[in-house]
Image (cartoon, rainbow, N blue to C red; front, top):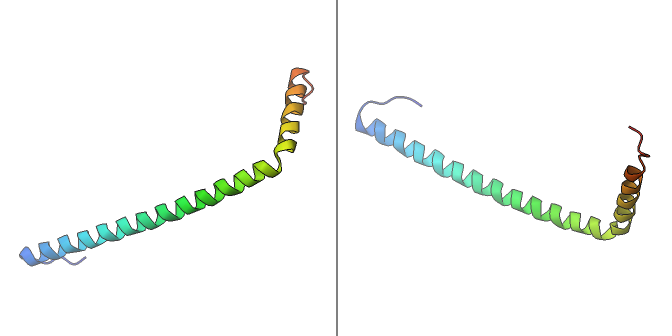
Length: 75
């Protein structure tokens, strides 16, 4: 940004700062909205996965606990 002497230069600098601040707020809002949408999609996909594979996950967790109890897990 070019320096300008006097009150006009100060006003121009202040106006530029305000514009950048508004632009930053808009970008932050857009990013927040996008993130909320992505998280919503992820959550619904995760819930669908959990519903579809509930039995398999339960069996695997029971098997894992059984293996831990009898020290059958090989490192």
